[in-house]
Image (tube, rainbow, N blue to C red; front, side, top):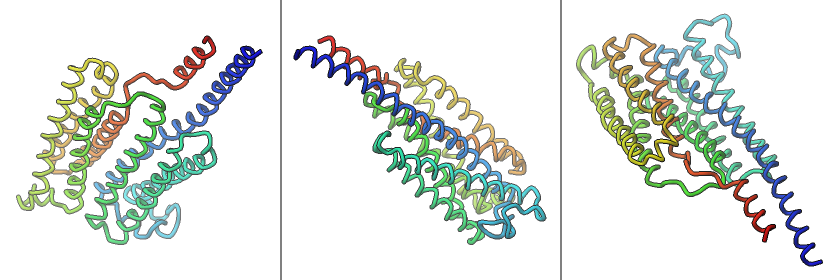
Length: 324
């Protein structure tokens, strides 16, 4: 009787484990899909913001949050107004999406990891700060430091969103390679610094002054100088992955994308200077590449190549228990 009772308890526990894992998996799948949409929307937001800056459309809408006092300013619509209006619209949609994810995390807090609602609250806070900086860019008439802060928050939003996505993918797995993360963190920080210098370069007109009058060239030279340590750090990462063959096998798609982006980024920078920054397509492409560069590096930092333990590990434990 005792044996039958223990066996029955284990069978019930086994069934409960399966139901619980599948139940949680359904909710986590929803957050993963919403997270993927958020990453794409944030990259689009950063690129459209860069296009708005390049086309000098930052003040095309003189008021905020509306544009010429209306949600859709048909009577004033042109390319610059459209860019600024669409940039604000995309920012609004990103904010709504993140608010929606935060609300779902509160509603389903008993069925998802404990860290998820807290992290979404941080993401929501960053959205509020980002919206505030967006308003200040108009109020302060495109002040260089305000524009730079605006981009900083956008990159923090992108990095936080990707880290959430990867942590959802890597739930219940082995410990990551800390040294590998630090190795990837170095080019990520350098790319962020270079991006901020690039915003200062465009928002203070330093590049045009340097190229036209050979004055105020410090910011431009610093921006170009940062390409060397970034390139070296990426090549070091590739060499390390080749040496540690398992890292190359698990991450070759991301590492290949990094190499392509690195050389295309250098080429776009050279073309931008050769055309005296008069071709917006090169500058916008430069901004897009930087965003993708940051996104891939962040993914690699938070991505774990080890095998998941999750459901299969738990089920195997239960089966061993039942067999014993």
